[in-house]
Image (cartoon, rainbow, N blue to C red):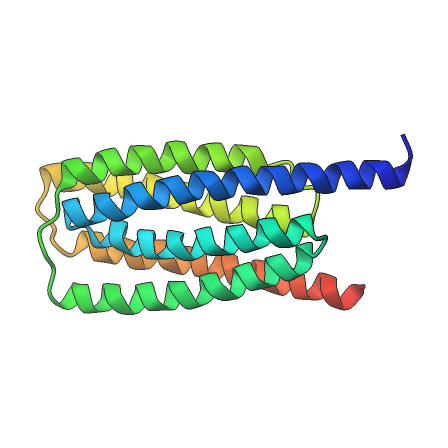
Length: 195
């Protein structure tokens, strides 16, 4: 098998993996929007806004991957996620000033679904053959870890009344995601400059 054919095979696999991640994210975003509204959880609502941006950028990454513009997809993905993270932080700060009661049991079940959906999508993209797929995989890993935090948050809230915990953890999750996105944007831009 020649090198050009192998490279084409990796690109086709990357596009397929990103496509699966896109469809998985789209399905979960719909579940999450409903779950956030039903549970009144700011961490779920903020993540659903974040995931809506993710879904759009994953779709764009998938399209650009198919057209051999992986680096462009990675940069667009990082920029959109940075903007959505800033919006989420502003919303969470406002909620900290006026905390509301959330449904901890509802959060628990949505968090379990989040770990399953994000974990599956991350598993599909973890063999990072190119920068676009690598950034998608890292992003899905940070999302999965975020859902682990939401799961722990929901368990704590079942037993202890801490009305500000949901928003505080949302800010922490979003800052972690923002750090990951900015780091990967810098990596993508360095790779572009090296070419």
